[in-house]
Image (cartoon, rainbow, N blue to C red; front, side, top):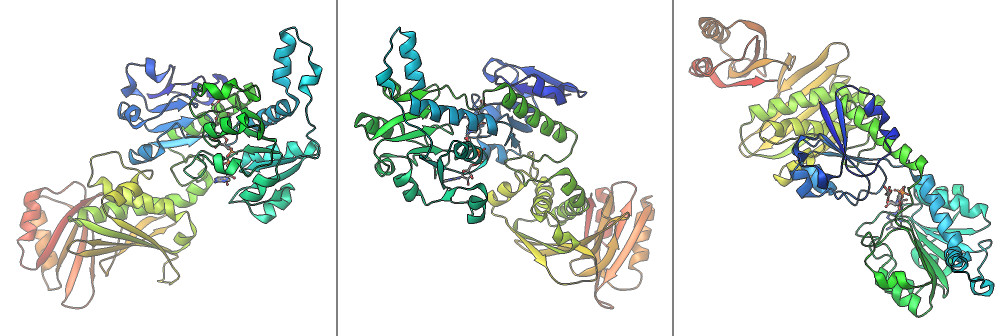
Length: 523
Ligand SMILES: NC(=O)C1=CN([C@@H]2O[C@H](COP(=O)(O)OP(=O)(O)OC[C@H]3O[C@@H](n4cnc5c(N)ncnc54)[C@H](O)[C@@H]3O)[C@@H](O)[C@H]2O)C=CC1
Ligand SMILES: O=C(O)CCC(=O)C(=O)O
């Protein structure tokens, strides 16, 4: 049974993909009211539930956190990544709703609609107090031209506004295509009549509009924040509302929610909504449906496509990656068992068609498989890179333009504290994966099952002696491959069996004079 805890109010209709599937239990209850958090495999949240390290520690089975919305600033993504928990969101399900809400806020702001509404309800009729401004011909400054910023720009243009944009990642081509003016931040500050922010809250965007930057804006500017509280500094807003530099402010989001900055809310020129950008039936259905479908993919062992902490990959792309993923896992596990020593670096080199796939995913998969042999915690492609780095293991990915005769190959080299080892493998369509070289010895075997690696001197009788010892212990050899670099030098044997070998057999083999090294490997 896969158990899902839905902590914030999420559209029940949007959960349909999960409700219709078998063996999935869905509980709709806030985390603060659930006594047995440890039983859940998945957690669904909007922005209210804070997914902290402490909460994740109480949920040892948690595999996936689904944010039914865009911003993941209420989720400790770094800690989730360390713990191997996938974080997904619904990147575009609420775009239109939030753009429409922002536009409604802008229109309300310049025409004083909320204030006029209150006044009429108080039985007043003060027409001259609420003279507004037209949007037509004004310049809207958009900070952050992502999904929401783009939809907002379209609506502003339809109202005859000029649209200036600052976004460090915006290309000239894209701004021309959308029909907006690309500016630097200073230009936008000094020229815009209305400035609205649509970035995530990050180290760079926290306090982007502050005492200093707001002082550069036009006198009488309107400021809007329907993205995240803190992008516009609330103290700075109070200062400039008080001295009249800022004419009006529209806020859907606050540094603390519900807002604690009571002084800010007391200004007549501030209009506010309680984080309603995505609060439409349509958006809530979209985001819940989007994350439910993703969680279902995860349960079915397929690729999720909207993960924050995994390389994004469609199921179609994964089908191309799958054979190499399997090979990488086998090599990672083999080398980890074979090299029983601390490791400094891992290099993975892709050649031929293997170099054309999503190599970052396969590299992480190989590292996860390597670390799994050594660590007793949940390791997967989400946290493999972080855990390797934390343990001082450097990993390097290379694409080789050499042609070693295979249509594809993957070579993994591991520098340990005492020795360096290297394995090369290839994936043959309809035939499976083969290891074609171990530490420079050419060989050819299928990396699976109960294996035995033997390094020995290339002298007559070794194979017979190995066969005799195994026979004396009633061990049947399933397959056997040999490889050597030169006549009479060192050589290797790779054997496979129907059952694992126990220690007395390995000890008996090690005692043979011509045997240098013996290692049982389970794949
Ligand atoms: N009020 C509400 O209910 C909602 C609020 N949001 C907020 O809106 C934000 C934007 O959402 P989307 O447009 O979907 O995200 P997005 O990821 O499509 O767009 C964000 C844009 O910000 C730009 N950006 C990043 N750093 C920047 C910087 N330092 N200066 C200028 N631009 C920068 C990026 O290049 C990107 O184009 C979300 O991060 C979320 O916090 C989203 C949905 C609902
Ligand atoms: O869940 C909500 O209503 C908040 C939406 C939001 O802020 C987001 O998607 O980033």
